[in-house]
Image 1 (cartoon, rainbow over the protein chains, first blue to last red):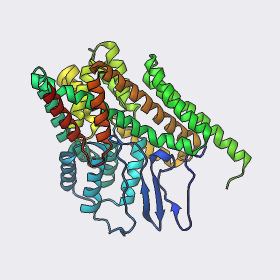
Image 2: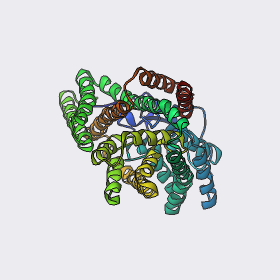
Image 3: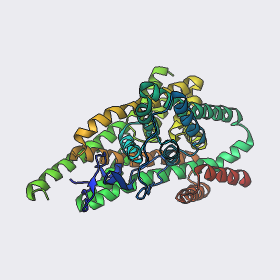
Image 4: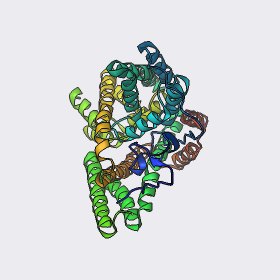
Length: 258
Length: 168
């Protein structure tokens, strides 16, 4: 199966970016510049992020930062990043690409696409890649510490405060609103994760369209009936992998490569 | 509560997720079965994760604190720090296999399953809060407000808190 046909137009080529699974992101590169960065992947917040970069010529990169400057940049990102996923990504882009000039747009876009595939929190993976690129192993430590230590401290303090104030009637009353609101925001996240993936199925024909809905519903139902979550996720991946592979090979057998 | 088991459960959940809240369904199932956490603690820690700075995925640290104090939050920190390091391996591997249909298919299928399973876990939390007209209205309102791009999540939660206080 071809999840997304590489729609190359004249004069543009697909950059050497890890963009082929449609939901990871799509980058078109012309003459070494990113002309079209379309992000279709789910993020924690799911806000789609379009970075118009067509008219900017890449400024020359600044030399790699000292450890102190590197740490300072991450601390400023960590302290400002309320709201997770996309807003933090935008902050990182502004700080590292535009303000300090330590990375190119293209590098950052490539790293972010890779992070969608890595396990766990995408922003942590991004900090690891950028930290390593800018300062090797010490850079990784600096990036993670700078981004996470302030946030983790605030998270623990807020939880501790909440655990003490839980009994207060004010907190109870506020929770009557906050709890359903958290569910609503979570459902929106699930919805935003699913939509781009369902679209990929739709583009690949009727069969894949049905398969995508089936995988979505069946895995939800399986977990509801008590199947272990991780087993369900792996099974869904294996089924989709097998179907995609068979489809791709059979379509290649029918019509030679275009 | 065995801290090593807790660490393993959190690590496993984080290892098989590709976003900050993707570890929710697995943790939800594992911790509820053992009686180590309640639905209430899940939703409380999710709310803290939305309110606090940094990645939303830090909600697990809040959950760790609620179920096992400071030790729990430390274990949660370890559990979310380790799996993203695999991005280095992903970077190497991906150059070689990125166009293989099976790889594309696996990532696609697992992503779909994550969304389905995630929704089911949220329904469990919702059921705990009660399917009343009240909760349905707030869930729907925050869903709709969330689709407004300029609306920060923290503002939605603050609004919901005010509505909760005013209504009681």
